[in-house]
Length: 104
Ligand SMILES: [Zn+2]
Image (cartoon, rainbow, N blue to C red; front, side, top):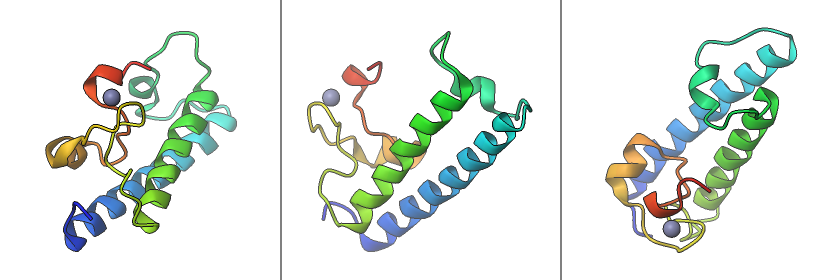
């Protein structure tokens, strides 16, 4: 593994927390509310909030699975496999795109 066990455990905890936050937001959206933090998530105009939240949840979940499977693809760009590095992952542990591919 490229990461220390303790580092990875910390990233995994943040990923789990993110998953929980997103699930809570999704439940609120489905209940017809407008949760705090939702606007910041919707980066593409015209995308339905529940659609965006489900995609974000999928991303978080696949990151967690990679960590749990000790899969080396965790922390790499899903397009070019570039190592995203701890500086980026420290901010966004669920990141799965390098800056060149981030907009896809
Ligand atoms: Zn890339």
